[in-house]
Amino acid sequence: MSVIERASAAGPEAPVEAAAPEPLGRATRARLWLLDVVRTPSLVVSYAWLAVVLVAAVAPSLLAAGDPLAQDGDAMLLPPSAEHLFGTDDLGRDQFTRTVHGTGLSIQAAVVAVLIGLVGGSVIGLVAGAVRGWLDSVLMRFIDIMLSVPSLIVSLAIISALGHGTVNIAVAIGINSTATFARLMRSEVLKVSNARYVEASVFAGHGYAYRLARHVVPNASRSVLAFATMEIGSAILTVASLSFLGLGAPPPTPEWGLLVAEGRTYIATQWWLSLLPGLVVVVSVLAVYRIGRSLNRGRTSVVA
Amino acid sequence: MLRYSLRRLAYAVVVVWGAFTGAFFLLYVVPGDAAGGLTMGASGGDIETLLAEQRELLGLDRPVLVQYWDALSGALTGDFGQSLYQRRPAVDVFFESFPATLQLAFVGLALAVVLGVTLAVVIELTGWRWMRELLVSLPPVAVSLPPFMVALVLVQVVAFRLGWIDAFGDDSFLGLLVASLSLAVAGGGTIAQLLTANLRGALSSPYVETARAWGLSRFDVVVRHALRNAALPVVTALGTLVGVMVGGTVLTETVFARLGVGRLIVDSVNGRDMPVVLIAVTVSALIFVTVNFLVDLVHPVVDRRIRLDG
Image (cartoon, rainbow over all chains, first blue to last red; front, side, top):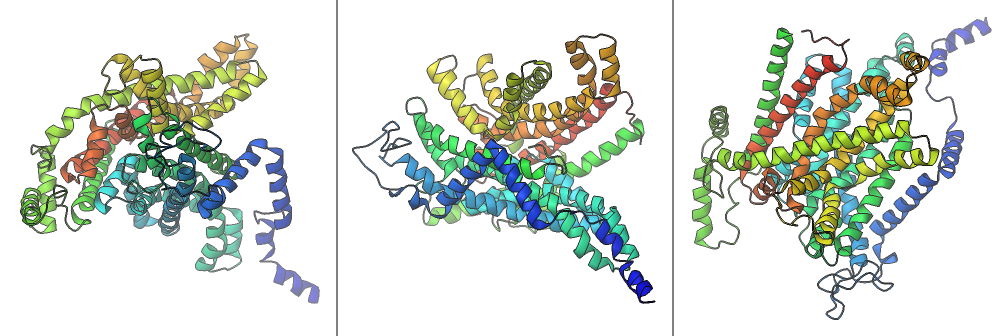
C-alpha cells in the first residue's frame, strides 16, 4: 500500500524531471565550461582582453595613472613611444590615458543599451508568445515596422528627439534593439511551449502562471541571454559610431568614438591618433563576439 | 501570384505608414517643442522671434492630431514641409542627395556579395588546411570592424599614402569604389558566414554525393550544384543588408566627405531639422519593403520548389 502511494505521489512529477533540459549538475557544467575555455586559445585571449577592459572601465587609474585632460605644450602630436603608448594629440594630451579613461563611458553606454533592449524586448516577446491572438499580431506588426528602418537611422531619429549625449545614445540603441530581442524571445517562448516538459507540466496539473514562470521563462531566457552577450558587441560598435558622428559626449570628455573622430583631423600624418583607439574598439568587439559565439553554440543561430 | 502581390502590397503600405507615424510622433511630439534648431548662437529677443517663426513654419501651434493629419495628407502628395535650414521643400533637399547615396549603397551591396560569395567558395575549394583555417577566421573579424574604422584606414592608405583618390568628396569611379568598400566589408563578412554554414550543409547532402559519383570536379560540385541551394538564405539576408548599407552610408559619407543623404541626415539630426529626418525614415522604410518584396519574388527563381501563393 505504501509503495503504491509513493509511486502515485511521484507519478506526476517524474516526467518533468526526466524531460528536464539539464542532465548535468551545476558544478559539472562549470568544469566543462572551464575546460572548453582553456582548450581554446582565442577564448582565453578574449576573456583576458575583456578583463582588462573591465578594469579600465572600473578603475582606469590602475592602467593609466595620468590625467586624461592634462595638456602639455611641449609634447604635441608625438608618435607612439614607451612614454606615450598611443602618442599625444594636438593639445599634448596622452592618447593612451584618454583611451583608457574613455572605456568606462563607452562600455557603460553599451551595457545600458543592451539592458534596455533585453528587458523591454523580453517583456514584449513573452507577452506576444504567451498570450498569442490579436495582441501577438499587433505587437509583431509593431516590431516589423521598427525593423523596417535601418537601425542607425532609427537611432539618429531617436537622438534628434531626445537630444545629444551618451545616455541618449544608449537609450536610442536600447529602444532600437528591443525589436530584435522581442522577436527572439517570442520565437523561444513558442518553441519552449511545445516542449515535452511543458506538456508534462500540463498533465501534472500545474497552473498556467506557474508553468510560465517555472518552465517557459527560464528556458526561453537562456537563448535570449546568450544572444545578449553578442548584442553587447554590436552595441559597443554602434555607441562608437554615433559618438564618432558627434552625437555623444561633448569634446573634452574622453570616449572611444569621439577620440577616433578627433584624431581624424590628423589622419594623413598622425594616423595613430584615431586608428589606435579605433583598434581598441575593434579588439573589444571581436572579444565580445568570440565569447558570445561560444555561449551561443547549439542555440538559435545568430548571425552578427 | 496576384493575390500574393496584393497582400504584400497591403503589408508594405502598413509598414511604411507605421514608420511615418512612429517617426512623426517621435520627432514632433516627444521633444515637446521641435522648434529650437535655429536658435543656437542667437541671444535675447532674437531667440523668441526665431522660435515663433519656427513654430509657425512647423505648424506647432495647432493640436497634435491636426498636425499629424496635415503631415500625413501632405506626405501622400509628396509634401513633407519646409526644411528649416535650407528654407525650401524638404523633399527637394532630400531627393537632391538621394541618387549619390543610392549608388553608394548598391555598389556597396554588390561588392559585399562578390566578396562574401568568393570567400565562401574559396574556403570550400582550398585544399590547404592552414589556408582554410586562416580564411574561416576572416568573416568574424570583418563583422567586428566598425565601418568608420574601415573607412578611415582606406582614407589613410588609398588617399594619403597611395594618392589614388582625393580624401575629400572624390566623385570618380575609383572614389566610389573605395568608399563602397568600407560599406562592403561588414556585409561581405555576414554573407560569407551565412554561406559557409549553408555550403557545409549542402555539401553533405545526397545530391552532392551523386554529383561526385558522376565524376564532376570539385569546382563544379561546389559552384554549380551546392552554391545554388546554399544561396537561398543569402538572398533573404540581402533584404536586411540593404538596410545596413543605407544606414552605413551615414558613416561612409562623413569620413569620405561625400555629399549624400547620410551626411544630410547627420546634419539634420544635429540641427533638429525634423522634416528632413521624417522623410529619411519614411524613405528608408519604403526601400526596405520594396527590396524585401523583390527578394520574395526572386525566391522561386533560385529554388523552383518555392511557389508564391496567397
